[in-house]
Length: 137
Image (tube, rainbow, N blue to C red; front, top):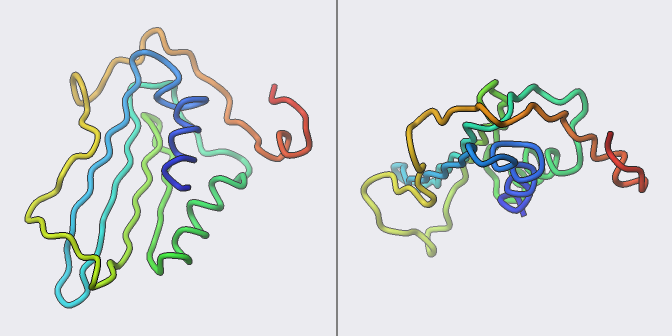
């Protein structure tokens, strides 16, 4: 659900809302004793980002629900160049995956900092309006 929410927001309002935008997802396994999954979602090359005035259902789902459900931590940062979501959760000992280095799941295409030209700024969507049936302005 969390990745679906991140994808939806990136497509509607973030880096995937224009041709120059990109998302990178990287993950790694670490830990001594308790193995942990560390996943980073990073948007770049999209419209300028500002922290929303109100946290909508999706953000609360990601930050609090996911962290509570998986007994881990989730941090969403609204950097001017794009949203960064960091997820750190323990892995079940029976489900541990063997790996020795960070593995990109969705590689960045092009340069590390994609140009933002041709990608207009978009307002942060207020999900409360959608839940009441109104459209965003």
